[in-house]
Length: 158
Image (cartoon, rainbow, N blue to C red; front, top):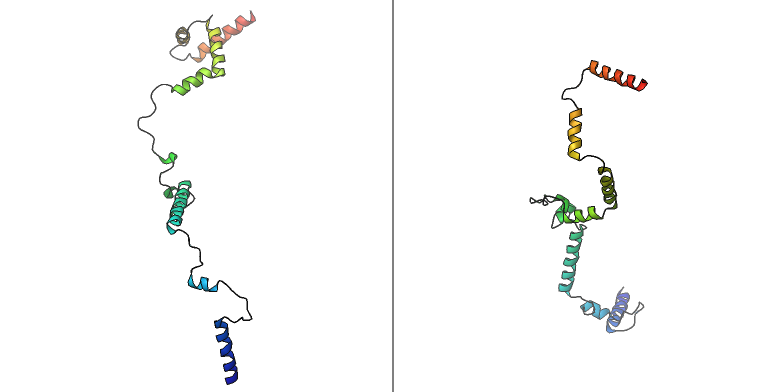
């Protein structure tokens, strides 16, 4: 036991002194132990980069914390949750709607048809007045409807 103990001590002392051992040789062991060889980045830059990434993920709705919904994570609520504006649009068609209706080929076609059909006929007001005259105020009775049908059928036969 003493011999083994004495023999093992010189090997350890020799290995520490720089004598070659049976394992692989690590040339950078001293640098790694002291911490000089470790590449360190700029901590401030890394923090700024992390904050920028977090801000972008929050804007996209990707980053949410535990117990937090995506809507709560955003700094501004989505457009569909905002209340409608009180002023509202001005009365009448908007300028872009005027342009759209003017450039619409279907509207042009319908406008031409109205012009052609309106030449031989009376105006809208006259049509409305005539239709009001034809309609009686109270609905006709069943006997009156039968009499009218019989007259029409007799005129058709004749």
